[in-house]
Length: 398
Image 1 (cartoon, rainbow, N blue to C red):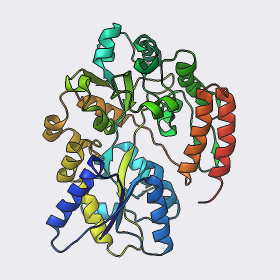
Image 2: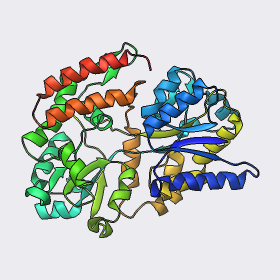
Image 3: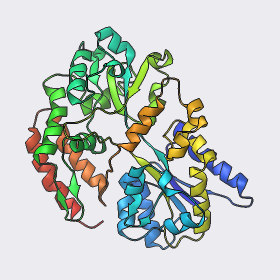
Image 4: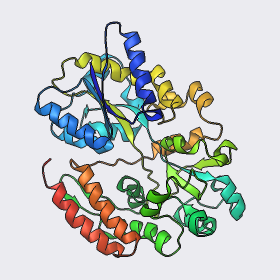
């Protein structure tokens, strides 16, 4: 069977190699042909080409940013009948995953991982700045935007190459989305092809982030991140939003090795407490030659054995509620990782329903947001420009 996924060689690919070896061992005579591509753009390109040739792989790695083009084309197998036949409990998966890959009563992806949003903080930096840890705020002190803002300013110190930023950079669309949602806004309406990023709620959220850069110097710009690398792993950031995928970059840091790291769920916004996430799933294209093998491989990823691999390779979090509450999770998370924080974040996770041309939309957003971060445009000017150009893309077929 053919399996299409994106990964870079090394630790990033370990979980895929381990799962392929496990599947081949459990299915004598079956060989998995690896079709590895570097990124999500190539996943979409490869899938579109294979569908056009009527020769798709048996299974492919799907995610929020790649799912829509294939669901909208009716190119994927509805997994609900298969799950029903094999007694796969779909209610065991996080709500955001089912909403991401579901349409009406159908489900087009079997979730295997979740990048639960959390905020990781450097305890050393908090102690040096004399700032109360987010987990120690005490009764009556809310963990919200205002508290985060106050802490971020207090954590910022120094200048030049040794400067400490209070908050790690937040500038990508599928991270800014959480701030927009929490401020009562939305990104777009795919049904009508309209973009709402220039509305007051979205503009207000983006302004909050831009002010941290331009007014306070408390958050790095995209250019600073690009030139300096992972500032949190380097010990130059007080608190960072992310998921378990950040662990690869941070585990060798001295403050992490000394267990001077903590985590807390995302702060509450002015309107909602929605968090961001990135549910991962496997999808079976219609007209694949051996959909039965694709289904068996997808199920293996969601089994206890498969979920153990997902957790131990530290790339993601379990896709299943029941597994999250099991003994394996208790024993295999890092000492400072907080199970309750991950679970709360996943129960609060919103859905980034990406458009067909997600990469083009994200490129437009990046362009305009970067101009706002360096002060070449006001946030409203950048939002108006991105909204105009994104609406064109939303209404252009892929």
